[in-house]
Length: 467
Ligand code: SF4
View 1 (cartoon, protein in one colour):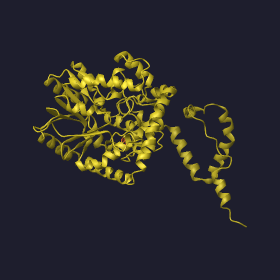
View 2: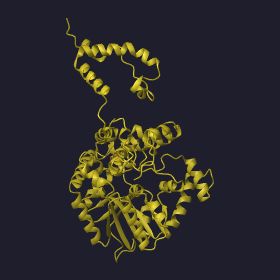
View 3: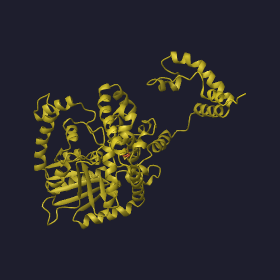
View 4: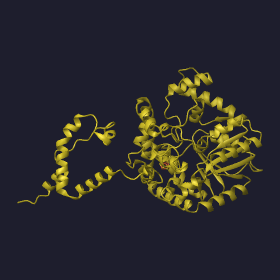
């Protein structure tokens, strides 16, 4: 995963200055959030499902080696092949080798974040193999030479007019074509790719250890085409995607779909176990599963960050995050954006170039509240912040903290300080920015006004004994 921005601070400053980007993002995240809230509250046992999912993930991660071995055995017993990749290069090389071995010239891909992480398209193209992204959003991303900016809505940052203009250039549709015409043009174009592709590449939402099954959840049907029409299916997945049993899907599927798109059920759920059997009429002749580490074992070994591997990439945390809403996905400079991206990206890369991401949060906790796994993202952000800060506190900072602690322990000193603050705030508020090191705090928000009647005075008056 290559960091692709000059740092969150600069990239987000550019994004914040673009009101149309913010409007485009809030429109989608807002409606996904509302739909999620509706469909999760209508399910009386939703919280019980969350609890059960947490238990299953914790248990699976605690016995990760065992379940991965079981998965490998199950895939092999059904005629599939399993490949282990330590890092992005090894994984990309493995997929390229598989494609070369079958003489592939065209590959059809369905949406997969892990293949973005590996920069797989670039590796395939370098090997002379043409790649076509078949998810509509990813197709637009590919045509425009862009990057996805959301886990499930890759072109959340694009307006319809931009897509119409892009399709007019590449597919010959009218520049003011409505959405129906654009999607029909994409469908006709992609159909050719499905028919001609030698290899289909997908990710995996879940990998079932018990049965060696790859589970794909989607709404467009392209993943089903990619896994059934080409001669070879290659599934690429992070090692954390394994779950123990097929019955665990009864817990994870409702959580994923309701938290992701606010649907009760996604349009397609495909359970794929190995290549086409002798009695079966469709499916690939060969099936390969590429299990990717690329920093996951490092994250797994780190007990303070292991919880991040429980993520099922539903994107609910992105949709609820005030920082993501304003900065957009590209500002994170990583394939994984939003609150979970701010943890996962530095964790997987060992922080390489992404150490400012944990600071891209107000720590409001909205992400943890909506997460179907209740992943404690704020806790991990604080851990990463402490590690990134590394340097010991400055002398003035230490003194200031000691002084604050002393004031907070002594009611008289606290009352004096708050009176002083009230007297001084008039002159401070006349200046647009606070002085010195706290200046940045007031560059993007207003200094809150101290109440003329402090809370402690109101409380002490209310409690004054009568008579
Ligand atoms: S951290 Fe939770 S809310 Fe965010 S994508 Fe992962 S599972 Fe979904």
